[in-house]
Length: 135
Image (cartoon, rainbow, N blue to C red; front, side):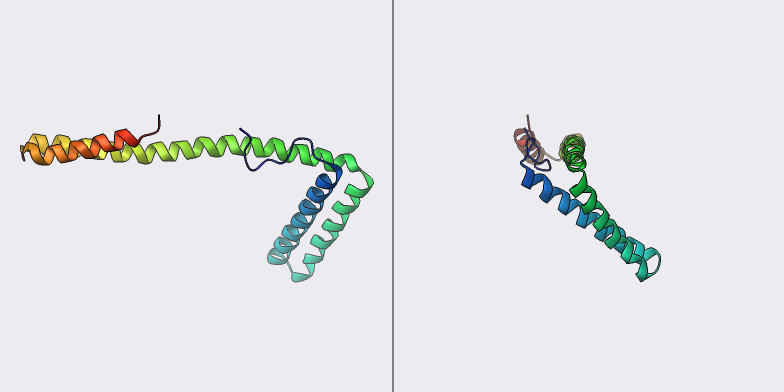
């Protein structure tokens, strides 16, 4: 399965140029904005200069565009793996926290002897959680 954060593995020339233009402009705007926040607003010109330099490098050396594109895809795949693992951890934590809460409630109801009818309701809730858990 290919994550949605990756780009096509064998792009055309127009696709790589569009990627380079996007990366150059976003990088220049980010650097210019950060420089303006940290220093003086006149430092934002550095972002414009960086954008122009990046576009010039892409025009003079097209190999830099392809290398950056490949690096982006490699980093995107790594990010997707880490994000998927982190999301699984969060989902299973939520699922098991609810499951253990329901099981503890069931045990406490049975231990207090509050009747099997109430304990059976808690048991049904526990079984419902187990039934919808991912396999």
